[in-house]
Image 1 (cartoon, helix red, strand yellow):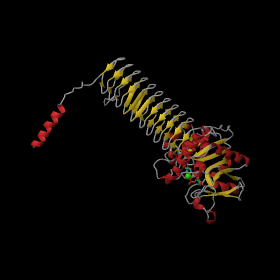
Image 2: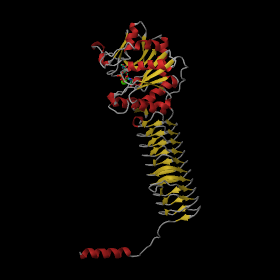
Image 3: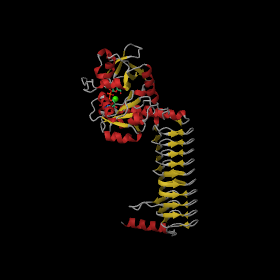
Image 4: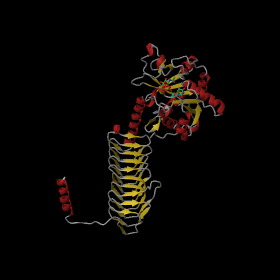
Length: 482
Ligand code: UD1
Ligand code: CA
C-alpha cells in the first residue's frame, strides 16, 4: 500500500485529472482509464495518489468518453467531475476545467496540478515534489519528466541548456524535427501550473498540428515566449511516469505494480517465493512470517494473517484469513472467512459466505457455500456443504453432502456440536442433527436427528451364500447355448 502521508493544507492547490479520452490504441470497448492494473482501474490509482495530496473536493476529474461509466466507477472516491463532451485534446480538456470554475463558484486555486488518468503509478511523494520545485523555482509551469529506455511516442522536453532546469518547449513525437528525434527526456503528462497563467493562455491554443487537437503541451512555449519560467523536474523512477497506450504497455505497468506490491509485503516480513509468478492485487494485506508459494493469486480486498502458508495455484479473492492458516495447493476462495489454524485443501472450493472456524479442516475436493463451520470441525474429503450451520468438533465423512436445493428454494441444514456424519450421508434440507448426533454411513436423512441419537436411513444388507457362483454358471450356459 502507498505510504500514508499528510494531505497538503489547503494551500491553494487543486488537481485536475485528464480522463476523457477514448484510448483508441487499446482497441477495446472499455474506456482506457477503467482498464485495470494491480486489480484496480487506472483512474482509481491516480485518484488514490491525488487524495494523498489534496482533499477529494479539490480533485476535478475530466470525463467525456463513456462519462457515465467512468463516473460510476470512481464516484465513491468523492471527486468532482468536469464534462468534456467532445475530446479535442489535452488543451481542450483544461479549457473545460476553466469553464467549470467560471460557472461553479468553486474558488480558483493558486496552483493547478494536472495528472493523466493513464499514468497510474505516480506516487504522492512525487506530486508533492513537483509542488515544492514549482514554488522554489517560482515557475508558471513545472513539468514532470523522465528518461525511459525507449522515448518513442512520448512528447519530448527541450531544455534551455544541458543541466538547466528551464524548458523552452514540449514537442510531440509527430512534430519532432530531425535534430530533435534523439531527445531522450519525455513529458510525463503531469504538471503543476500557475492557474491564472494557464487559464490566460488556453484560448490561444490552436489545432494546427499532426493530430488536429488542442495540445496542452503548447502552453510551455507560449509561457516561455512571454518571459515566464517553465521548469522540468525528473522523476526518480521511470516506471512511475510510464503511460499505457496499448494493452501490452498496460500489462507492463501491471507487472511493475504487482512487483511493487510483492516488495511491499516482503518488506513487512512476508516470504514470497518467485514473486514474479504471483498475481497480487495492490490492496492485499499479508501478515509477517506468512509464506506465499509460486503461482498464487491474491486478489481484491484479501487479507491474510501471520504465519500462514498459501501453497501453489491457490486463487484467493476478497477473503479474510487468520493466523497460522494452511491453504494447500489449488484451493479457490471467493469472499470466504477462515479463522486461525484452519487447514484447507488441496483443491477446496470456498464460495461466498463460507465461514470456517478455528482449526477446522476443509479438505480435498470439498465445496462450501453460505456455511458456518465451527471450531475444530472436519470435512476432509469430497463434500458439498451449502446453506448450513455446523457446530464445533463435528466430523463429516467422505462424500457426505447437504441437499440444499429443491429446484426452486434453498433450505437450511443445522448440525450441532460433536456430531458425526458418516460417509456418503445425504442430508435433505431442511433438516437438523442435534448435538452429539450420529448419522450412519450412506444414510439418506430426511427427518431431524435428536441429540446423541443414531440415525440410520438405508436398506439392510442381505448376504446370499453361493449366489455368485451359481449366477456365473447360469450365464456361461446361456453363452454356450447361442
Ligand atoms: C500526452 C502528451 C505527451 C506526453 C504523454 C505522456 C499532449 C498533447 N501530449 O500524449 O506530451 O508525453 O501524454 O503520457 O498532451 N484526454 C482528455 N481529453 C482529451 C484528450 C485526452 O481527457 O481530449 C486525456 C486522456 O484520457 C489521457 C490523457 O488525457 O488520460 C492523455 O491523453 P493521450 O491522448 O493519451 O495523450 P498522449 O498521446 O499520451
Ligand atoms: Ca497517453
